[in-house]
Amino acid sequence: MRDGICNLVSRLEVKDLRIRSKGRSLLDVPSLVLDGPGPTLILGPNGAGKSLLLRCLHGLIAPDRGRVVQDGLPLCTAQKARQAMVFQQPVLLRRSVSANLDFVLKRQSMGRTDRKKRIAELLVEGGLDGKARQPARSLSGGEAQRLAILRALATEPETLFLDEPTSALDPSATQMIERMIRRASARGVRIVMVTHDIGQARRLAADIVMMQGGQVVEHGPAKQVLDAPESEASRRYLAGGLVT
Image (cartoon, rainbow, N blue to C red):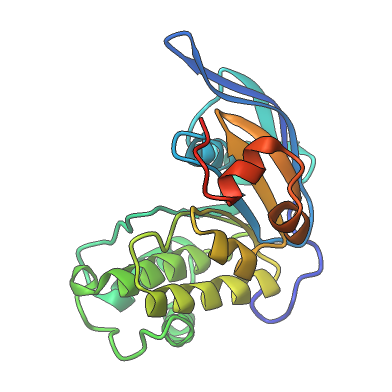
């Protein structure tokens, strides 16, 4: 996929997805289909269920009811292998920057020569080519997040889930990560990303999923949702009002 642009982006579908805890509904999504070009950005207030939905889509959390379907098939081990996820706080191995990438590529049974070439490509893509031998855990916050994204992309996923990857970063670091996201999306990687940053949604999103109280209150093209939201919850959130 890295050698050209893929015209077919993975399709994700949620069917009657529900999660409850102590008698309270945490997630209730009867239907959601992500089949456009992406990126898809998920917005909503704290506690809206954004990260919970993301984890269900990646199979990290099993719902009480319902299922996730990817390209017409129920989510299973083989389907999960076609996905990758990066969390808000990057988790890096206690080894060098290049060794973090090498660890992933080895698991793909890639030969040593090919691994070295691919690592060099990835480091350039993430602007980390001068830090190959540096301990990964000594990187700055933005650099560490870039490495986490590179490591996820090294598996050549069809779908990449991102949970607020720039929430703690300065504008310069955020810009670099957004550039990586655009490039991955242009190569055909399905991007599904949680954010609180409305400006970021305007810069990146092809479509927006707006959530409140564990429910999807609106889903549509980014311009439509951001400029002319149909739901009251979306209007209040985008206007900076209190959404309960």
